Length: 265
Image 1: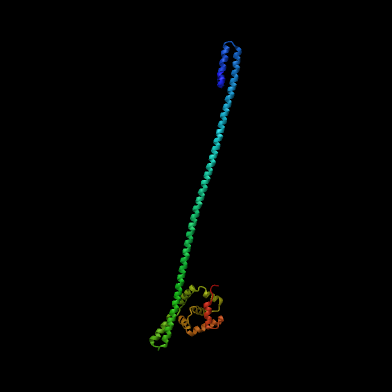
Image 2 (image 1 turned 45 degrees about the vertical axis):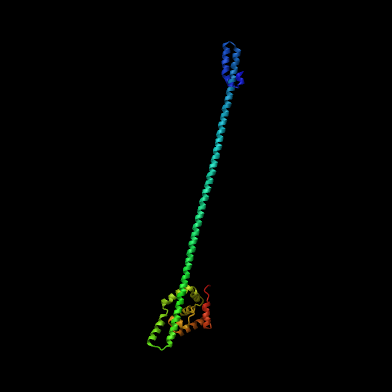
């Protein structure tokens, strides 16, 4: 039969009822009943096939939906990984920028600090040189004035000579303010000399401390007397008291003691 060979059996659902009615009209009850039975079988087969097709389509829809869900999930995971990677890259970039800025600011700070330190050191050195120069000039001026006084004293004393000698002697006398200024300059060069001398020898008087400070510049007794405005003999007596307190035998010992006195304790 053509329908069976063509495998279009779905048409039997429509053909068998027609054949049953046709044979019923021709009074052929058996054939009509047979075709009616075949109609029922064809309808059942058709319904079964249709149900299988619907089930297949339903399964296909489910599989498609599951596949879409899997793809969507993979896309979501991929997007999350991409977002996470971009965040890590951004974070690393920010940290790198912060590190570079910190490094730059730190180097700038250290450079400025170094420059300030070098400037302060240069200023300190300059101030120290200026201070040494002032004290050296003072000592030189005292020596020159003392030599001039000695020369004038050798000459016949006249009124003008006497006036000049008085001026020379009074010019070099250290007043209270002058001694304060001298101490300030002295401490700039020898910052701990006076305090260490006092600490190690608390029985020394203020006049004896002054004498020891002037001894640091290797001044003679006459020059010290001229600077302090006292007689040379007063300087000798002061030095004698100092040697006695320090257990020193001679002026040379006193000079060595002052020059070698350590202030880096």
